[in-house]
Image 1 (tube, rainbow, N blue to C red):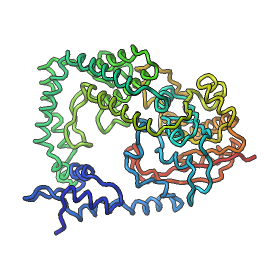
Image 2: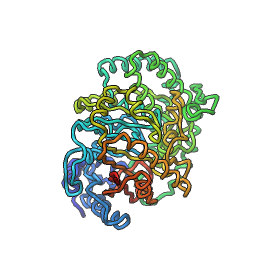
Image 3: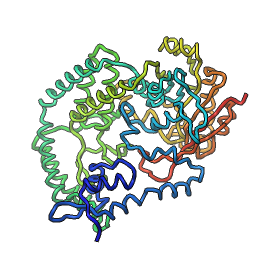
Image 4: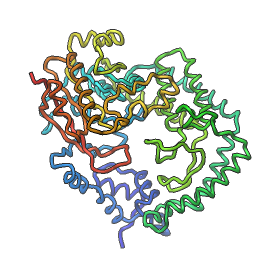
Length: 526
């Protein structure tokens, strides 16, 4: 027998036991997904205290020991930021748009702020300094620089990355944004209401709920799967085929057309026709807006929306496999799920979320200058580009010079940076420069790819160091499993003066195994 707790009591106990803020929603998640069994009593649903202890012990403490055994005792656990919740690492505008491969803002702030500790023993950047990010990505360095009172310049070869970064740090009239968003949303709802799709989808949802409640009750089904009391693959496949007949009947009844005629472009292959029609409608509304700043923000919101609305399974959102056009068994949720037939709810959710995140950031932002320039760090003339794009920031860097670099270069053969946002390039017509990416996944991780990577990163450092102050500091975040950075530093006329090896705990990839990255601190050899 073990002590039984209500969900509220379980949350309070777990908070004290883990020294983290565990909410009732966190506990409900564990129950709904079969991580902890619920115990039904006359007084309601209760949880076993020992079950909670066993669950949290399965990774608390043990993970640090196990990871150090696998990755080395030089692993700096203090830089894991394991005490943070996801809401902390994706605070305000850092979650304005999904982006693979970005570092958490707390890591950037650790090296840019003025604190010192047993690991960081010297202050490098001070208020008013200028920091450069030569692989700007989604703009995390720019945002954190703003919060800390630093000026910042970013460079990125991807036009879409440049858009995301600049949307995060530019200013806009939020009242005007709200008014325009509200009008577009109202227009979209009128457009959708003229079709049969909402009625079809409502009937489909009713049928799905009835079917899932009967054959995939939660959390009982997930518990049976975890205990291997049934063959999940066979059971899921059988019921997927059974529900497909119901789906076909509804399609015929409502005469809904879901297929696009052509499948040549990304926007044609990965979206059902009802979604595509709504995408085109909203895009046309955005194109009619006169305010360029608001137009850019709405472009990012639309991109975020259509990324969510791709015709793929929930398990394949990060890495697309094959488009789907019918309900399917979803192992992630343990039930039959369906593709999306309308983007209205996601558009509304993301517009509200974006405005709220901008409001939160505006309370923190400082009167400093940040900009991301679309260009290649191997060859860009930064002074010329800045003089054109941001004369005010150009004047500052001419007076102060750029104190140093904080950046996370691409990893060898891990991500195709243009392809991850293929939907945006396809819809908005941005120019793709895939051939200029360093270390893209399509080049794999061969010896030749590694050599090209070393040459590419070295070229970027050699080109950009001429824009830095004489006593510069360079921080590069990398998972250097091929030990390439000593050669890169040598090629760039730099020396590695320190390095910090940190565990990466919350990765978006499916591989949740032990993983670390190194923050290399480089300075000039001269």
